[in-house]
Length: 113
Length: 115
Image 1 (cartoon, rainbow over the protein chains, first blue to last red):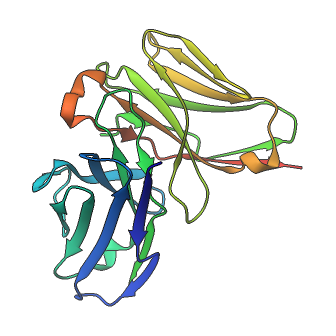
Image 2 (tube, helix red, strand yellow):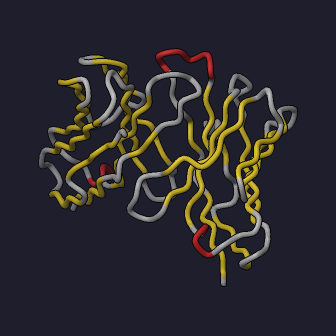
């Protein structure tokens, strides 16, 4: 069966510090991968998605970047965190078909102080 | 511009009664809709979906209704149980999106089922 992992679970970082969140998927190959952010009162906002290694699409201009160095690994990064980067970050995967649901990881809660 | 709207941020229901969660969309290209349930500090989990060729889909206590002309869908939970208390997200997509398949989510509705 497929599983999706995210770490760390919780992170407290000072403003201006770098960020690296990791997401890995097991039990499937060539998944579509997604990064979402849930900020207070703003629902789930799609940040990036990737249909293959090295292929990244950005949905909104922001302080973050994403990379996919391996088939089942998706990384969310920032060089300098802002207060507004605080939120709950979720990674999701799907096989890519239009009727396939997205399966979410457990999330990372980021607090920027 | 929000393409998927959940206008009720919260809903409180008595155990055993029906919960009705509403969702409206503006993009007429959307033809596949999903509901996700999310507990605090966890990722959302898929609940139920419906494609635009149907107007109703049922799975146990959960039923989703789609009114394409009104661009409106609703999730009915009958009977509601305290364990149903969570945030419910409505999501929509375009089935013909191919490899660019992605979901557009609403802001969510917090359902509280009181014992």
